[in-house]
Image 1 (tube, rainbow, N blue to C red):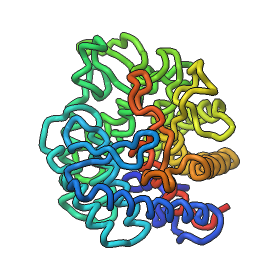
Image 2 (image 1 turned 180 degrees about the horizontal axis):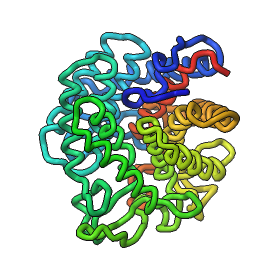
Image 3 (image 1 turned 90 degrees about the vertical axis):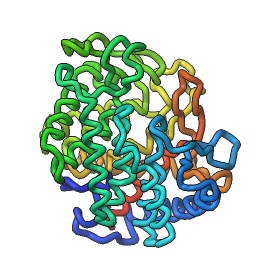
Image 4 (image 1 turned 180 degrees about the vertical axis):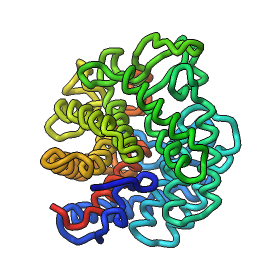
Length: 399
């Protein structure tokens, strides 16, 4: 059974006690990882002249170059490219990639020293510094992770029981807001609590996960994007959406964050309720997928089948299912692994950037209601895609 492992590689080779073999899942992963290595080289050649303080975020439909943004506290996506570089280094052992990973990671250090702007600190610092520490053991990286965990914990409201996601949006939502995406940042808190940080970080993470389970999900297992609370009393005011089609719809990436997040919570706690919940919401998601297993951006968009897809949600779920397959018993676990392999095959077969652009994947949707990043290549889709491939590779020759 896959158990507690540092950072995002919950199914690393060491944990499984096996080496990759060139058959079964490993062979499938090798094809994808070779492709990712080529695309990473192309991306570096394209963006390095701009300097390490510029972060690749997206590529518009029909374009061939990454849109770059200055690293800042407002940009939540800047940890993904360093994370991609660390995974690519883990796969290739290429020192040139390692040096780039270090430079792009270290450009984010200032985030650990400023007050928390919002909840995305885990995305920014654990995908970058987390993977960097896992592979290098650099103690400075660990110190930066622990400092950032302290910043994230400062957003916790004990009256509510969750971390405030968007302090700048309290007025717009009418209270303390907690979004599905926030679940992913709990990984940094859980890890910090076990590696020299304040033990209360784990208590905060569990409280957040439990409260989100109660108010960000409907009885049928589908998710709301946002839950809003009275910051003084903790009373739940309402559940709604921000990036989904409607308050009553299932935004694909939101459900994906839930599957990934509760699977990760089980890894750290061994609490069966998190495993059962991860399986439940995964089953709901999987039951609604189209034939090619890549979701429409929102499962309830009336424009389906002409609505945009979201390859990023597919990549997140593929990665989560590989980990979940090691926890779920018997045929259920085997089914999750089979489905993850099919999702990755579909992404590789029909959603690759290929020669057209250096992104790994095309056809993701960022913020549809705002008209932002619709049918784009987006950096976090690439991050979870390469993570999923590394997890698949770690399974060796298992069928």
